Image 1: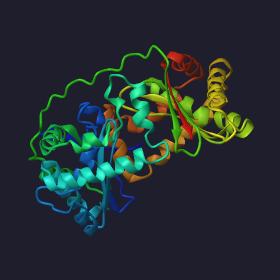
Image 2 (image 1 turned 45 degrees about the horizontal axis):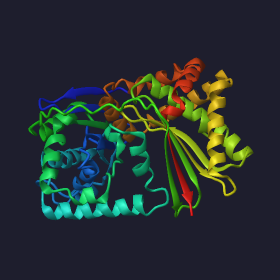
Image 3 (image 1 turned 180 degrees about the horizontal axis):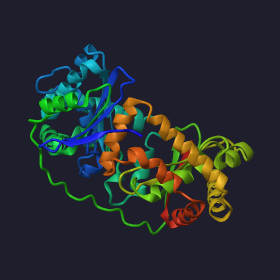
Image 4 (image 1 turned 90 degrees about the vertical axis):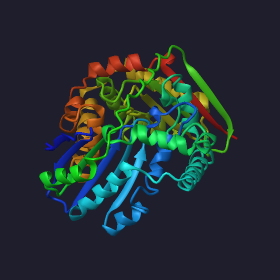
Length: 412
């Protein structure tokens, strides 16, 4: 049981506190409710670009990382389709330093053309190195627009192209910052060796006078139901092996559908006793690696099969084998023991995640973002309510051919 408190400042900033006296450290996690889903089709990659810009200096702090390191801390960030998350781990005695650093860049960045040009160059090089020049690197650049036609999940977090990042102007950056990087669009969660009342006073001191944006965000367009199979073949690739990806539209992260699909994915591929490993790698030797997993997006996401083929396997045989496993999953028996084993492993994973104060800070912010912070203590119950009957009916509905988008990578 994780005990926490929830507060809201007058400017709309949500503050979450959890006291953990078993560590001499504290984790300060600031989640901004902005990801690639909030971008415009002709200006993609801004949310990820901002992750870089936030470390480039703010109103009163020229070098963010220097102050973190001098205080004995460590910091990082990540961007997803749905959110951007920043976190500092620091000795508890230096909590105020972390709050000072985070408040200064929330209050205002160092908006300079030089800083923007530097970070655009960094992101464009990342785009080329990780997405355009790496084997299978452009997977989500190809697969997302195949699976999504309307929703902004149709582009990757990095953006549609390096050209769009190059075209970002200083005016674009300022508008994006003032729209999304404001206290009423942020959640700060603090976990570690803290005194809650003192912590709240420090948060008020450093964040309380930052004005809210009061921006009314436009609704995100819902993805229509997919009604026909989609396919894309990418031939003559500089990849080490042929590969296949099959994705199916599934429910949102806060839905019952997500928890059922998560259990399905684990039955299929979690560990060397899972069905896909035993049947397609160990017994038939069709794949060198195969996996099934869920995207976990806030809006309806994707159930994903990914497989790298063995040298002697044709892509047609590989896909037929996956389809056969899916059909067996739908039509043949699933034992309660099989489900219970996966649920127990999931419950153990959740319990282990609650040990670390950094994870607790991150999870508190994430569940608050989802709109149900009590999931920090009740998510295991969501999994325990998954039954064989729910799994069978969900699988039959989910794994329909017209709900599937398939991508083949074929090597030279």
